Length: 430
Image (cartoon, rainbow, N blue to C red; front, side, top):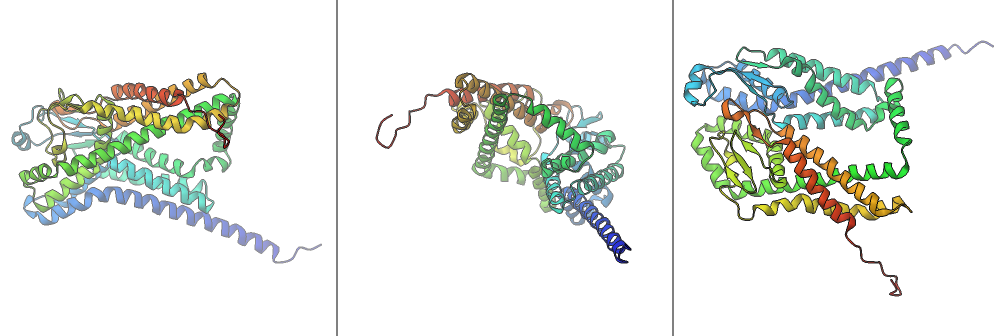
């Protein structure tokens, strides 16, 4: 039998349509990656450009502000920056240690947070379009290429980024967001990714059912408790800012930066807002945080030396706090609430197994996982903010993680093991 003359043409058209669809998805993913980079760099570039346009008396070219924006964006993704200050500026600020090159490593986490969100958006749209591999691969490759261009354009003898970190770390952060957005769907696209996913799923499936349920409950409970602590910290920071708003305004007026300088300063503080929330979290945990070597801001009191000229620091509590220890109850109560909510479901899943032992194991797991997350949060929010004593800014991740694990474990044990009132039947019998 002779095949119809149009059969081959239909097959070719289908293949051409598939290729065009993949090309379109790849182009859209590349555009999403470009927007992610543009938004991140524009957060600092826009106010700096306004300052350049309104302060022509500075005598600086726009390229200086571009390099500054690129450095800020890379710093926000964990790329260390080595600075060498001009001797005139060193004499003006009179900061010990500023005359020698120093490393700036305090990352404004807002940039990384935005990058992760944009990566999640790209991952979700790629899955919805059916391109589980082409879209994410094109987006990550485009983001990495743009990152390399930005890093190379920002190279300057007085402000030198760590190029190895600049080439890889921002792209890895974006890729993490893409993987979160795909929710494991990349593993269904075939090839090595699917084999790795099947191996991990097979290994997890070999564990006993009660162990898998306890691990899942501990991970969910520890994460939920940390989320509650972070939410309380954000609320407390908002209250402190509003309560100390007059002092913050006076600091703005004392800096005399003008309209452009005030806009840049406000943008800088907003970019560090996730860091400030993490510092309040460390305050609620107990160890607190430092604003320079030898300083301490904790529930026991505040001891400060010279600090950076940021108006938001006017919201810091001063002196000894009489009732500061009340803040330590926040992580404990958060763990208690999560454990009470999870306990009935966990008991039901354990079936006829001894409840007490597995409840204790789950509570300890919640504390350990929560402490690890708190330690990571504290580590990401701190770093060197300048020369001399400013090399130590932020919380101690080991102290925050250790104390957080202890407090969350105590709260989880209370919530898991607190006696429950027996339920009553409609007839009133217990």
